[in-house]
Length: 409
Image (cartoon, rainbow, N blue to C red; front, top):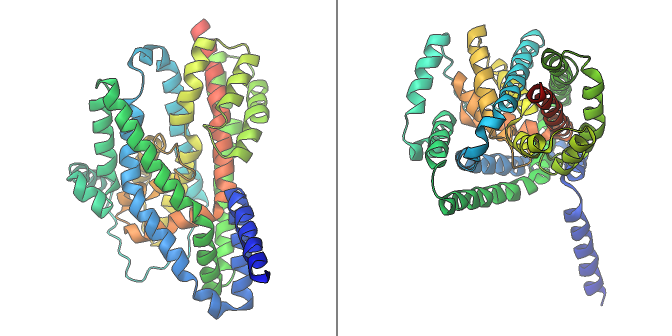
């Protein structure tokens, strides 16, 4: 009877843990990992395997995820709505590119370095923009199977774009099959991410046990750069874009969107889940339904200023950590790649983090190092992902309102 009671209590505890949201689990994992590292550093180091398994799982799913998400996203865009969406798409792209530029600027002003396991790591840094473009061209044309197997994310992205545009005029059953395959891969990624608390526990415990609290200080600097970039976009760049279009004070609109959409998105951490909130806000703002009924769902997919910031800052942090000198032209190219890549970052929690290896490949950074940076991204994701989603989702409404004003002129 006692044994049955113990089993019941354990099952009940496991059920409660599993039902707790991922953010809470990650916070608990960080706390437990820190405590274990302080109390018993030798034992904490033995949990490094958990972190290693998590990073390896991310390495396994990232290439195929990018391929199918990008292909499915482009293939399933409605051809008939393209003409109406041109002003909105232009705003989304300008905002995302501006976010990446901002991230580059702040990364140059406040460079970040990270404590990484560089044993056996390799980096083949390019010598200037010309070599970057040459390397990029050869990587683009690599066989897709080889690209997926070796983690050549540039080729994976290129094949995803090519397949997406090729399938755009396919019949509906083919598009549905591609969408179903994309959903299946996304489901597998969600399973991997559900194990993030265990992986992060192992990473935090091992990192603090071996380096002390130096790594946590690095993470706080990294978070500060990310949040500063996102605040600058929300409070300076976006209002400037809106002012150019509407020719009136943009801040009432910006603050309304941050309050009504951004706060909700911060806690849900899902642009898709925030679509109903944004649709209702657009209705309250008296926007044309024909505009926002398309722009809001579309924005949840391709308007990814926050993701562009995350990809850019963390990729440049990886380069700094390896002592790679980045010239301004190469950094600008990174901004463009980050902006394009960010459009494929939706659908999965932490999706922008899985695109970091793509940007790192521009600098010849080893995939093992890039995935360690991805793991650090999950550690700070408690704040980073919430702020990123808040910026992305609130900007959907800001630009929809601006585009609606433009179309009514």
